[in-house]
Length: 98
Image (cartoon, rainbow, N blue to C red; front, side):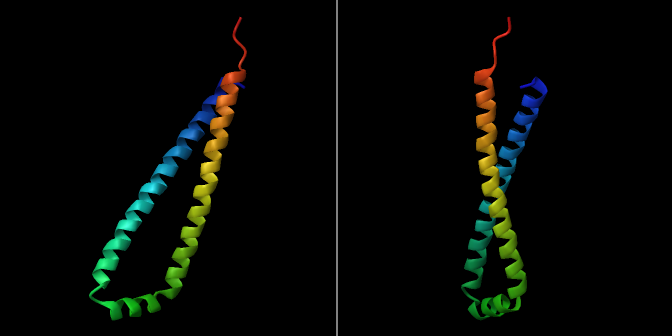
């Protein structure tokens, strides 16, 4: 494999890992927000019920967005495995220079 192509694969692997870390940080922050929201609405259960009913269409769109992100996240994990394997296999099959 050419050196240029190998460097591009390494760059893509780096990008995939950074994206995965960003998504994990995003989800961790969403969990914190969910916990804070739960604590706040403990004292206002009727308001929570009214708002949940009012925002049903928006919550469905958020669910679809979450499912899409989860799908992309799982694809990215597989892509990381494939790229790692390709780079590792290429490093092992290179012929020594004479």
